[in-house]
Figure 1 (cartoon, rainbow, N blue to C red):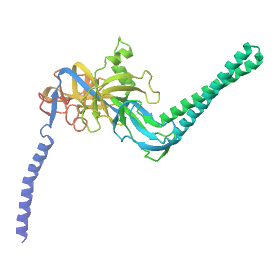
Figure 2: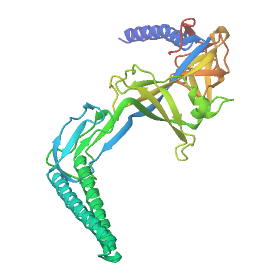
Figure 3: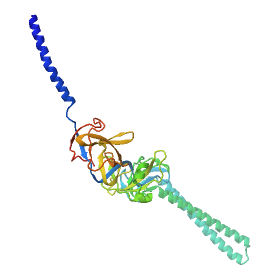
Figure 4: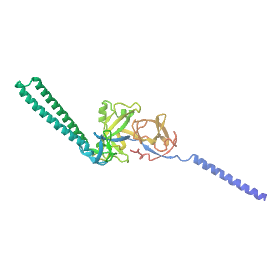
Length: 380
């Protein structure tokens, strides 16, 4: 039994002795394994148009609040929400009974005042004849003239009251001051309304205003040397509108104004772009993004994913001899589209930069296995 155990132990030791060198060799092979295969791209120059997105809210070029000018019960709503109406079209009608009665009363007062003027005129004419014949005194004649003037003044007062009554009656018919689209109608027929009541908002949306903000850095970047600020605005390229659905609006817009004063609390300037809206697709309150293009001639462009940042300095890995990577500081243009950078210094055309694993698994001086060095290009 002891002899058998010795033979078994010797066999295990022999087997282990054979296995240990094998494991050691495998470990050494793993530690000194192949270089990681990482995607790279060759830097090339070309004309680049970057689109920078700015959140925006749309408004009609002329949004008009519709309020009644007289108080009364709303008797008729002639339009529906979202309906397109023309200038002068009837929107609402307010109870006209009392207003019509006021007109009738004012007309009667005018008739009475006119009759008084006629009587006073006849009396003054008769007194003039009597004065000429020395039958009455001049003071008596003057009294009749004063009575005539008083009657005429009362007639003018009655006519003014009639004009006011007719105007109030016309206010009972609320019409559209401009062509546009009817907004929300919160009040229904039978509601008591007054001049403080907002009946609806009429949006003139033949053109739509897109309001957005530019930072101080962006304002400086878009301003062109040798030109006034207003000239620089006029020279800005047309912009696109990305709708909330992600679709691009089919008509391009133009920046029409940028505030000349920066907001001290936000450090931004208010800007406004105007978009045509012939199909009525855009409505007040729509949101989206203004896509403002910036054109760089003969620019070097790399993906943002190919860079990393240390203390406000940007770096990328350039592939050198023997496929070793070297951390290289670069400077980039102040504007970007959120995907790519325009490199202004630190790289040259023909350099190969790593686009995969940057800031995660790559270290300076590492040897890699470059992949797609000739075909990889940054996303537009």
